[in-house]
Image (cartoon, rainbow, N blue to C red; front, side):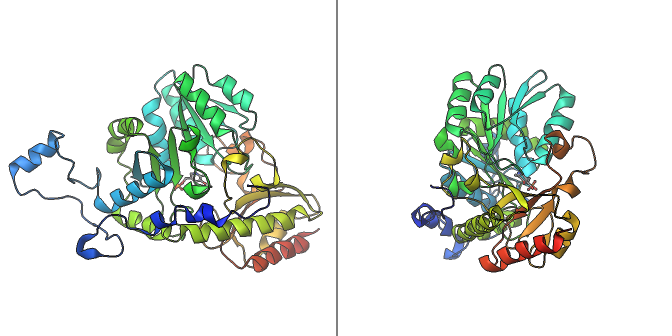
Length: 395
Ligand SMILES: Cc1ncc(COP(=O)(O)O)c(C=O)c1O
């Protein structure tokens, strides 16, 4: 895909039938997946229960382990990512922690990309470090540097594009080298969704989603997913998932499933709104940098067949950040992204993030940077709002 282009509809349509689902027959021929809001499942006979405990039957027993509504979503994401299996978690962070923990131990070294999501950074810096796992951070756009960091590592943690800097990594080169060296590769694919990037096709092992974002898409739930080959998913099942207990609830799975039935339509608008506002900002004299894969050549751009609507731009000194933010009428001030409403976070506010291990300070996010999540509003309304706010923010 060329820069500034809206993805070709056939890319979106390819997986649309899968999205519209449900793929399997539902009880009473329901046209959507029912919510199985139950903690446990009953057995008629002793032998049925004994068979489950002996691993000879995979019927449902307890919702922290498995649940039909959650299983339907797990099967859907595995199909879309083109991998064997998936698991639903209570949040994107529960998914990230469970994708990492089974593959590290005291003395392990992790390689992670610079400018990763703030709480993933804290997982490495505030939790894993305590247990003797160290993390080296590399510039993901420097493929040679990433490959050079791999020997001796247990795991590489990728986000393509990264949070806030929105730079991409060469997934094919990194995936191949990680496999050759036996390093488990994990990627956060929440931004692109499987509609616009399928990391398994490039040799990445485990794919994490903050389903709270585009997959659910309505700012009404927190959920996470991990997808990958059965052998690695079994490790996650046996060494993290059951015991950490961060299972996705049936109701949250149902919200994600419902959201995903329109994912292709929403992603086309998020993509178009992100590109239109990025283009308008690129042309503005007070904007020094637009951080969006369509506006910067980076090694992993070719892995993307479309764009999310989340990106950042840097304002110069002529704009008062607080006045700009307060002048926005359509775009709201708030964290998160992936829902219908456009949202901003000014870096100036985030630089003061309390608690240990501040990712913004660690990777030098410029104070004039603003992260914007382009939502589903009319494109012209959104662009006009951002440009007006810059004018009102001028000192
Ligand atoms: C890129 C990215 N990954 C993961 C997460 C974590 O997801 P959750 O909030 O569902 O734990 C977020 C949340 O903002 C995110 O932006």
